[in-house]
Image (cartoon, rainbow, N blue to C red; front, side, top):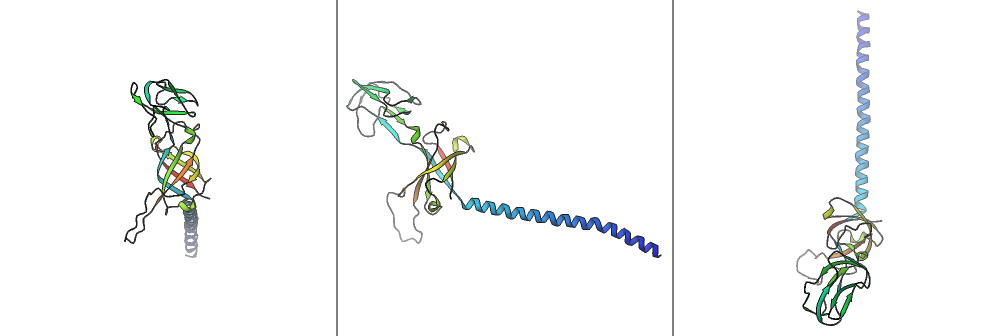
Amino acid sequence: MAEEIKNQKELAGKETAPHAHRRRVMVIVGFVVAFAVVLGGGAYWYVSSRTVYIDQSVISGTLINLSPQNADILNQIFVKVGDTVVEDQPVARVGDEVVEAKTTGIVTAVSDDVGQLVSPAAGSYVVQMIDPSDLRVVGHLDENKGLSKIAVGDPATFTVDAFGSKSYQGVVDEISETSRASDVVFNVSDERPTNEFDVKVRFDPEKYPELKNGMSAKIWVYVK
């Protein structure tokens, strides 16, 4: 009888040891998972707290209008949309005057008024162009959504709707001194109006030649 009890105890001990080992393994795994969750959450919070997202953004540059000095008949256009021109290159002839490019850039529009009278009136052009080095990604950011965190020189990444999730690199080049609103409207509501400010991101147009004026974009600024 004593021998049988001894055998039963030994068998119980053999069965208990694997269970205890499995419990220890489960405890260790649970601890590792919990630690990973905490670490991941902390990393996400850290990155989020140092990132300002600007959804409403567009690639923009200053358009350069080329027009004659005097009103006359537009005789000929020497370039077409998409052409690259260099400074002082002839782009059109109006009467006896040859209209030249003011800088190196890309032609964005040409007049279709060949044979018609054209003038140097403000806003008019026979050829319109843009200097690619002047292109910026301009984000419109509400003043209460991280504007105070951003500084000139902060690194940024951006995507362009036309190219899906492809990421581009840039740096904050300018933060507007005034809001985009032309007038401040006061009302009796408890909710104060929120103004938008422009945040401009500079990028290398030679590195990203596919980026064009007017393309929609999204910006992530990494604040220091």
